[in-house]
Length: 329
Image 1 (cartoon, one colour):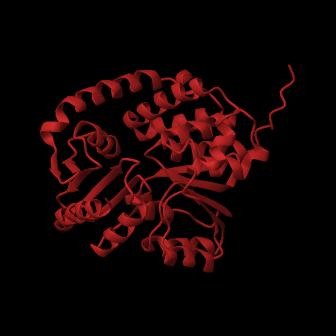
Image 2 (image 1 turned 135 degrees about the horizontal axis):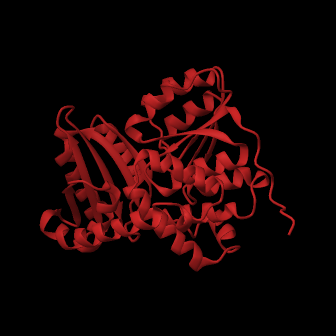
């Protein structure tokens, strides 16, 4: 059989993708760009993005930033990089107007639409340079981010078997929650070669371990969590903040779930916030504004967001979220 897939490009040492390390969407953005143009990649999170950007030197002439909500604290680094490299920002998180204006002034290409996940936007940008099977990668991310009904995602997903996508998505989603940084890098490289998640070494085993962990959390969380109105919140004792925040919606019958962890030395708290789809509040927009008002930063999309705030403001954050949830009814 003749292979009609576009050939893998020779290594592009002058192009790099910086993407979110925490979930399927971020890792697949990196895999798609690596597949399309064989770019290098760095995986980071919101707390370390500034440090990651500071390592980008003028040996690069193009930089892609994917699935990482931006705030004013990194604009200086973006301005520095823009002096020697083209910058493209691909995301689906809420962007404050002042940030969007600053990106425009720096002539940074912005691809941002809340209706589809970042991987779907990435696939759409590079679709002429990607084989048909790469659509599966974008589909995994769309389902993992619960944006499978997005206008672009719908067109991609209908070309593939839905049950197969769902199976591979859950394996990948659960495994990434347990994988360390080294393994995540290897997974990105394997995905860029279009290896199915169930065929990647360690993924099935890690997925089962995560499933066991979630079953234990389901039993233990109700007694560990607190509730303020319809907002359930708990301090993380290991594990993914996002997974726990999402579980709170179910096991505590909450409209909003908040999981946090605190760095006692620095007195800062990282939070993941999740909401049920019936909530008439855009969590990303609300988190961005509230975190900034409390001396921190945050962002996200309509039903999932994250923030880093001073620990002294944690209760105020939770109380304000609860008050806004009550007013949204």
